Every structure is written in C-alpha cells, then in structure tokens.
View 1 (cartoon, one colour):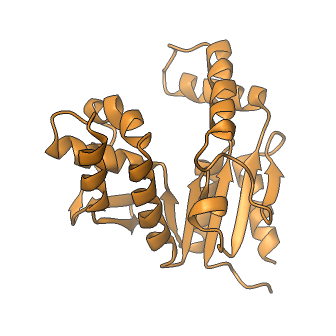
View 2 (tube, rainbow, N blue to C red):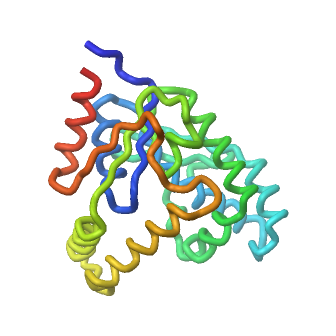
Length: 224
C-alpha cells in the first residue's frame, strides 16, 4: 500500500474537470477541497469592502497583503467555507459587485504574490486537494502528488455547454464557448507570470474519454 499523499496539487486547462474530480478525491480522503481560484474573489470582496474604487493597485495590494484567509470543511453541506478575518463570507463571493472587479484585482502582481503565500500556507497544513492552474509549478512545487488534467477544447466546450443547458443557461452557443476556451488556453499558457503548464513530475491524465468518477479512480490507483 503506497502512502496517501498529504498534499495533492491538481492543475489543468479550463473545463478539464479539475473542480469535479478534486471534490470527489477530497471527499473520499476526507481532505480539505481548496479551489484556489476562489482566493481572487476573496481579494476582490475584501478590497470592495474598504475601497470605492479598486483601480489603485497599491491600495488594493496593501489590503490583500493584510487579509487573514482561512478555509473550513463543511462536510454536512459538502462545501468549503471561506473565512475572511474570522467572518464566513462564502455566500458573498459571487455577488455582482464581486463579479465586476475580480478580473481587475486578480491582474495585480502584488495581489497574486500575496495570495500565493496564503495558498501555500494553507497547503502546508496538509490533508488538502488544491485545484488551480499553477499549484504544482508555483504554489506547491513540493506537493507529494501532482496531477495535470487535459482534454481537447471541443470536449471541454461540449461539457460546459451541456452544463449550462442543465442549469437553464442558454445565452452562449457551443461555438461561443469553444472560442472562449481556446482564448483562455492561449492566455493561460502565454502569460508572463505563472503560465499554465504541467509540473515536470506531474502525472498527466487526458480526460476526454472518461467521466469525473473514472478520472478520480485513476488518481486513487496511483496511490496504490
């Protein structure tokens, strides 16, 4: 029996199944599920509470650097609660005012640096499945297990389109979603800071032909 890794870093392209697979793995192991992308929403929410305008990079960065962010497993409801300075803000992170500014806040280098430190601190506590785009390469390069999920743009666009239909979201066609995914892939891979790529020692899993449960099982199989 191989040793179950204390930290699992899971990276991959947009809509490759990271979140769904990560949740399955975390639940099975009774680990904390940590979708690191939510940290940028925390930063946007916190900055919005203290500033009328988030265009001042220095002020936003100072606020984020002084944030105390903690995560807590809520196994009863199957969610990860997010605490900012001791206050549960989980249900506030997808408010319209956060949606409007999260991209601006996330683009600031000092904000990214501050959040990377927070992510690393949480990851080092162990018993965690961390999902993102630079976990194995930047945030937790020493994670005991690194997984990189990949799928064709067409497969990912189809998944996102069907997911939208099931949620009664019909504002985007398959072609629109595919174009957006291709653009996001290009942006993610060509960005100067922490470009999207698998870590040298990551296990790459192509998910085109597999369900999320099957991909999770492949990860469990790697553990022995």
